Image (tube, rainbow, N blue to C red):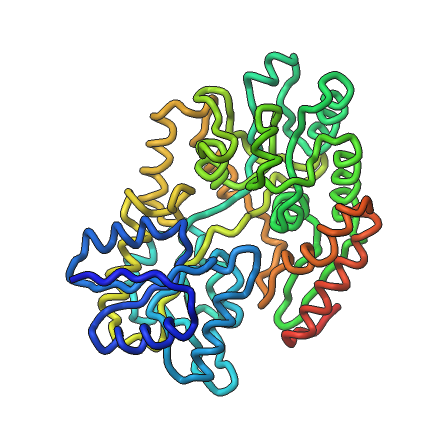
Length: 423
């Protein structure tokens, strides 16, 4: 009999995790978005009892995953068998001992999973979760940043779709002058500024070399990104609203274009509670680039599944991981699966649906192969510093130019707290 439980109470988590391990069940910590995939596994594998514990998946760099594992380490019990995290940088701490407790993350490429399965990932997909040649997690989906635009509105206004950041800003000026109220993106979520604009804009503000963290918001490309944001916030073509908030949804009919990750396809455009786009209106285009820059882009999460080094049921864990990663009905959970065969199936299905105008498959593939490698994966996220310094600053009427140095300092402070040398 399968066992499906949902709870967020830590005491219940610790008790349930220990008890179920003895019963041969596996305990899985995941967010609500991944719940359908877990339920699909339960239906497909009734021989494996599953205890699902819902949490926030460390969304917004909440640190939930690390906090809960630290508490389990202190109690010396209550570890889950599998964890999903929306953050790509958790391997930086999960691969290490913590105050004498063994590293939480299981090494996956030294016999735990067969190499033939691991070789099925899209090339480079496992790089963020590889430490010193050891793979500590499995990417759920890839989240390269593309340029999404409403072809119907652009045609109606007589505008061409931009292909560079400079053209994107110029389009904002035209819209502001000729069609006020229409807009080109949002920067109200903590992930958008760092990952969509600065990472895509080749800004060296979140870099890691060995144990040294570097951030330079005064670098030329960082200044260009800050100026672009300031310019478009000032002419109101870049909103400070969250893409998941009521204000954004209420004005979604005026959204002309937006740079954003591959998972916007399901989470935003085909979401009745989001943009709820009409079939044929929107195009997924290759990423924007600087006119004099490289054809690169950023990445927004993508999520990672981790196996626990404490598990008493490794075979059940392997079966679970292989299912949620490679089954074409659930892999990627609405985004571009990290596993190549599942990604191909997802892309073919999206293209065949005709929902998006243009060459959806080619644009996604271009973005997936263009993620800029100048971004680091230290043991913290730029989102927390953004939420602390930039979000309230912009809301108070300050500019990125005003806030950039303070944002940089806050990131460096966080780097020092977790033990990095800072430059």
